[in-house]
Length: 258
Ligand SMILES: [Fe+2]
Ligand SMILES: [Fe+2]
Image (tube, helix red, strand yellow):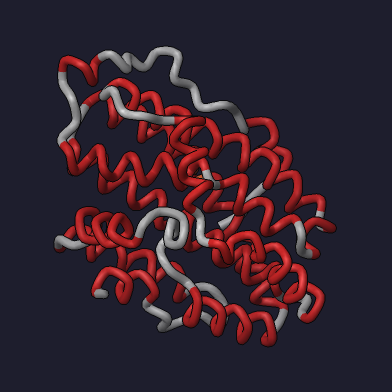
């Protein structure tokens, strides 16, 4: 796995949806399960800027390679959320600003202290960036797998076209985070120990703490609960196994089994 910042800067772009016929959902709507997934995905994609807030208060902001990536990553994720919002809107569902504002109002009170917590941990250890990059890799792998599963389960040509385009961009996010994580973990046994501890203790599927727990449970059962889904979760676990010092965590398999 490798990542070239200059290439990413050249290729990074707003998701192209100009030719997507969102009205196709009016004549052939998605089923309720697929729509429930898309609400979750819309909310999590739109929450990226809040994840960015938590990273930028740490010493990661001193690394220009990281900040260049995060700038473009945040932009691309914004348009993923916006595109999914258009699918919801075609089903006469609330999306974009109104839905996001309601979600932010419902965030747990502890959310406002997260930047303070990250600032303190970042002052105590130089390895928080390794944790963040590894966390990002796991979440991007999971996100891409979730879109692949939804593409298969929903079996809707317009949605498939849209999700394939999103997945292509998620692939570049994976390349960045996995390259950063691998490099940082390879350099330091302390980084490995802290990252291993943080993931085994605190990692939960992306969206946990942002959307209601019932929706997290629904998504992991619907997308990863059957044999194909479990096999995909195991594949992600094997990718995590290949990162220095992180073998045997079984994060995804355990989350699906839970
Ligand atoms: Fe995304
Ligand atoms: Fe992504």
